[in-house]
Image (tube, rainbow, N blue to C red; front, side, top):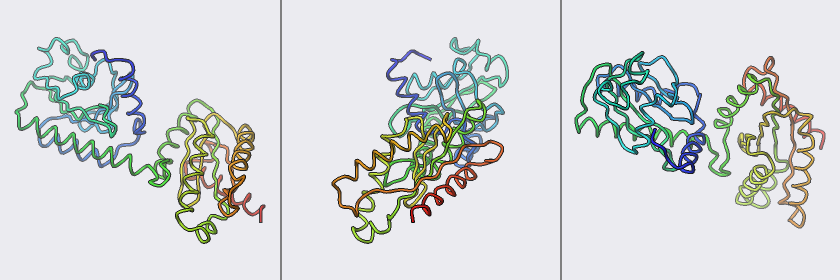
Length: 318
């Protein structure tokens, strides 16, 4: 890949990571587009390829068993550096690729065409590409069709991102949390690091809506999420599970280790509530659960344990 400035490349990598799709399971929304590309262009392989720091990872890989390859061998890196469609008619006759292991060995690439995929913020994060084991050309009409299909991929990524964000608060929603939590817990399981989930429920939230109106209720939810983001680490996953229920997943921390963090959070909200209308005070109940890989087979299991402890805290206050 042609060298780009460190700042631009780091922004590109950040934009890719912000989508939170790397190492996620296959999805029909992308697989149907690679199946369609294979059929329309009559090629054995079609990929939605995302170029990370040291690898290219395939969100969809129709016709190819591998889910990732080294970035060093990536045709898609060249398309990203170029910033426009890359067409390689015969890789064996192209000085850039003729010694590439992906050309000389399986999958024996001879023809490649890749259209860069643009993230919602404008960064080039990967390509929609088609691959053949025989040399061929791509007409102008076919190039336009490939570009149109890449635009469909971009729309799916944009839709996916919106589907994982809570519209009111701007933090992850339940769907986004589950995706991020699966990745974080998988890492903790592999590295044998602890993790703790905190579940929060706002106390008296219905009364805020009933007495001060829904606009104040919405403002309370936004304020709570803002305080949570400011208090917890950037590496912690903060999400709104729904209604007035929030959660935070802390990787690398046990429940005993986060007790001090919870005390500081309580002080933070006590300070925030000072001088405000008592009806607008933010109060909450919280429950915590240590991640146990043997007991928590899914994110839902962990949420349920923390939720149960949150209701213990809520009942204690009544």
